[in-house]
Image 1: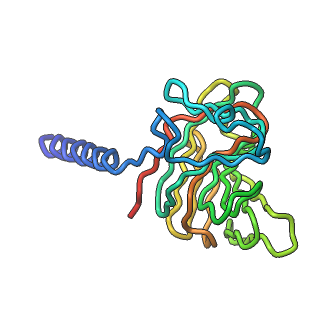
Image 2: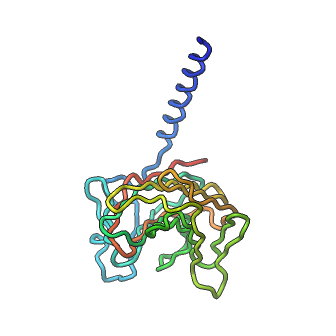
Image 3: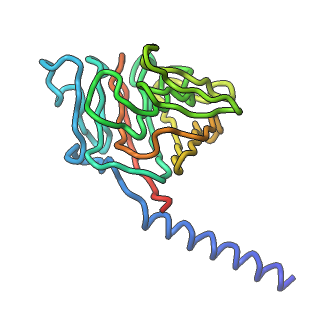
Length: 219
């Protein structure tokens, strides 16, 4: 009995130490106060970026119109990314872009973790050369083809209704990627052709909010 108690105590202490270590390594890429470490790209260059992306009460508010995205100034690789989002009105379209490369454009060179309504967990390859292998099938955007390619999620949609918060946990570890939506594993890929870059959140169709956007480096 005493041995069991010691084992449980050791297990509990180990869990606390691991959690404390992860908290120490956490990088808040959205600090809940401002957007100083981000840059904004909008398709309509005449639009006011401060009207499309705003910070209030620790939340990033995104109007959804016009299309565009907000992109980190820093680049990252080998990380676990945590994003919380909710739709303010009718759910529309958005996405979390990982490993964003090169210049800003409507469809940047990146790996998108889809946020379109009922499609969170899909992987979208953006621009020529973006590729991944899912379930032993290799996907890649080839020259002359449309600039994106989608790979559907594993399970039924695990999204919450509009107004409720959702969690996205995205692991990008070298050439591997894993997408978890509200605790449900929705996609696993290997052989990524893009393995580092900036991170972006899209404005695409309707009002959406983000909070608690952080990553934990794996190396």
